[in-house]
Length: 465
Image (cartoon, rainbow, N blue to C red; front, side, top):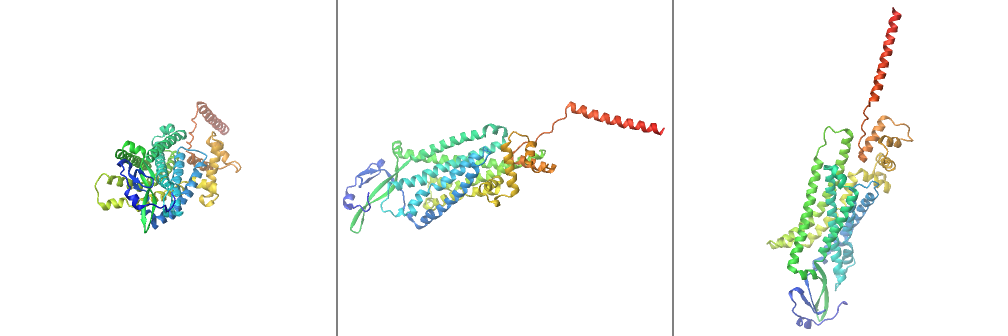
């Protein structure tokens, strides 16, 4: 349809046909009944404030998320030792990055390229908004949520049930869980996208002495919704979304509480020094992962609460002012911006709480201020020894680490041993028990020494006499 296509206002008004409830409203331009329900773009969405938010603030936040999460993705993907907790963190960073940039194609096209001023909207614009502002954020948000739950459950099992974690928390099992999460998120997104469609509805408007057609985007029921029954399918769709939000958010909250309880658990006072060091390192890792999980949970709170309150008002009577506040477009914008702006904080958590992350960043970027020389050398040497000689004993690795520098002192060996065990959770070697042969050898030496002393005493007595 070209811009400013002339129409006959009186003829179009008089020739309107009655359409059944399932097929919506009669469109005089296409001469068909279209199943429209509500307009897609409201006049308030062309406000200057929204142009600033979506045209300037949102792209800047997206750039921050891309930069910070790209560094996190690069560091996590470059780690030599792929632990079970690395893959969920990696996928969380990737999904957060994609979720932040998914609205940009629409916002740039609509606001930055000034298509919000188009006299006639197109079907491309209708579906661009649906894909970029609804389907893709919904898909990546579910992925982030499911991987966050996986990370929390996995860490809880590792800390509370270490023997069972050997079987259930291996990298191979985590990859299987990741595939199941991807399938589940795809299914939920597919069901979500089949509920409604986008369509164009044409108005014949009269301005002064001229009449012309105007095309606007509308939201309508899909064929599946109409076949199933609009009211029944709408209720089913609402129950589906509410259940997903309540179940996922509740499970994430429970996992977070369980992890906080594991952090508060004190170590046994009779544990050895090495075991205490290992448990302390594991506790620090648990704290860092718990903080990251809390950040992702807080990022989800505004949109979840807003959605639940809006759906709750559909089933209970509330004052008109409360309905207007909950359906305010600026409140939805605030919730969306808050969700995106909290994701770069995870990068700061990595920087302040993970020495290994800082050292890895220094290795990749070459910036010395990220980690001290002592931390960098200790981490690099420990990683090289562990990677090149994974089956050697602890003393052999220490001797390799001290080669070229002379024979290290006892204090240096002990320092290397503790650092190595802290980094890689190596169990301290037990002392070898004395065998029967060793005991006989010691007794024989004591008997010989005693005999020599007795002979010397007898010799001295003879000389004196």
